[in-house]
Image 1 (cartoon, rainbow, N blue to C red):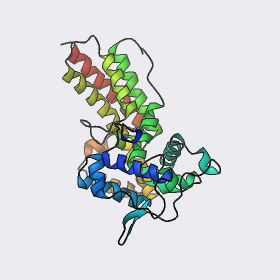
Image 2 (tube, rainbow, N blue to C red):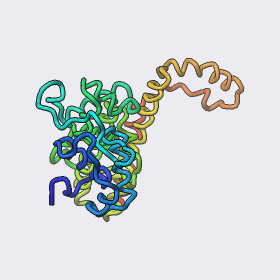
Image 3 (cartoon, one colour):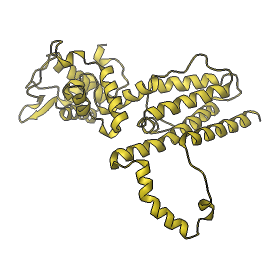
Image 4 (tube, rainbow, N blue to C red):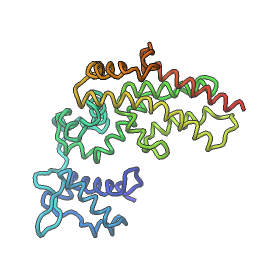
Length: 305
């Protein structure tokens, strides 16, 4: 089996697109050459016609190919095979691209991340990035994997299941605080999350923390999904607040100042006496710690039954 046809985590249409990009990059397909038709891709790759069409559409969107009347889909004019190792692109690597994207997302939010913008920050062209990362979806997955995997849990960790799970929860919290865009990426689904190697490593570590407890596999998963979901759920509130700041330009304090008169008028009605009597300031870190301890308390009570 050729290198390009080996099993991959990428969906089939992206694997096909990557193979055609490789052929263009290596000079096998030159500007103006006709790329494989959808029928040929169906035959070669064993995929549905819709998948082959999606692959060519992805290449067309990225600027690698164009439609030529009477010729079908051809390599775009002006594209060249891989350039000699000189200039800013010589030092380009997938890791460098991912790091630049993370820096951009940390600074301006995930909405600011695009292949074109990351390329500009690196002093390169978007087409160069596509040689290393097939599209933004894969770039975001790599960003999540890198950000989450930068702080591995210790082996074997502290003694006792509770100390281990608390350590894992606090590590997640610190990562989410550092990368506010990350929780929505990893929390697209609690039951079917995106495939991220560092996330799988976390769950594996947590499962081993439960070794020795009389829990079946389903209960172990419920335990971890509910705990990790709590951590990410609290973190998402900060994500939304930060993204709102990027979108509106208003800080949290400025937004509260704008809402102050409305809140004052509501309290003046006398309809909310319990809320009006409150004298407490909410700190998100304190809220997280309180909820984490109560969650672990509940789990400890459950295990003691």
